[in-house]
Amino acid sequence: MEKPKAYPRRKKGFERTSSLLTARIRKASETRGFAVTRVLTHWAEIVGEATAGISRPVDISYGRGGMGATLTVLTTGAQAPMLDMQKDQLREKVNAVYGYNAIARIRITQTAATGFAEGQAQFAHAPKKQAQPDPKILARATDAAKEIGDDGLRSALELLARNVITKNKHKA
Image 1 (cartoon, rainbow, N blue to C red):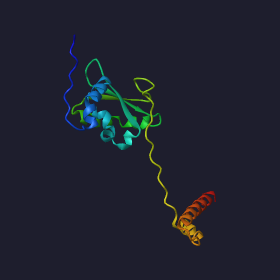
Image 2 (cartoon, rainbow, N blue to C red):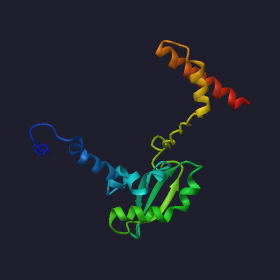
Image 3 (cartoon, one colour):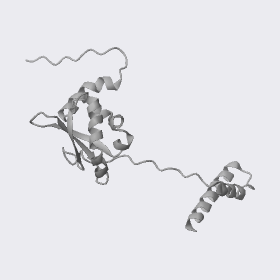
Image 4 (cartoon, one colour):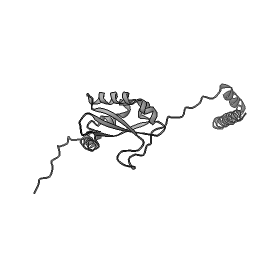
């Protein structure tokens, strides 16, 4: 009968979750081709926020000749041409993480190489910028509600007046 695998003894008290899961994450990512998990976990730091917002690393495959690997990057259809133009810069940035020219080619895909369930491309949209209201509109809204004695009611009416004035301004 085979002895059960002994796990290293933990320290007393709390440990960081990352230290408990590092070995499991590394093993899972190595089966997907990522020898360096940093490409997965720090994608935004490696390629930049703008590129990370439109892409995600999916797979690293090694050819039979051993002349470098191919990194497969998932993106949306509209962003694929823009990402295609940045292939050389992406390859340089990823190879800087490895420390040598591990990635020879970058392949851009619009679905994951491993299946449809994992290939759902959902990238973060840029937050909408809040437009600053026109000072004239603010003055008109404040003037419309200046007679109200209750502070809560006055601020609510100012907000309502500001929204009405702004909406009417866009229709004209």
